[in-house]
Image (cartoon, rainbow, N blue to C red; front, side):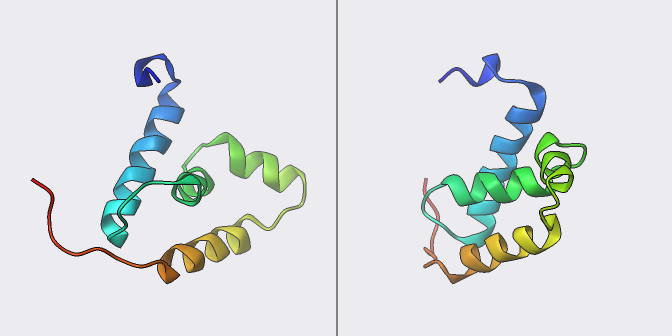
Length: 79
């Protein structure tokens, strides 16, 4: 996948997902990290779409965050 072909918002979301995974000490970035990043993205499309569908975005974001916090963490650095 060529990240340069993605929209600016998509690139931002992928970067935020990676940062989130690192901050939480997770070994890999997966769909839940990306979902969390998309749900909290300022000016992002996903929160607006979900709100139009009457989905409680805050509650969904909290549930995803809780799930991510339950995952095992890795320690140390990769060099």
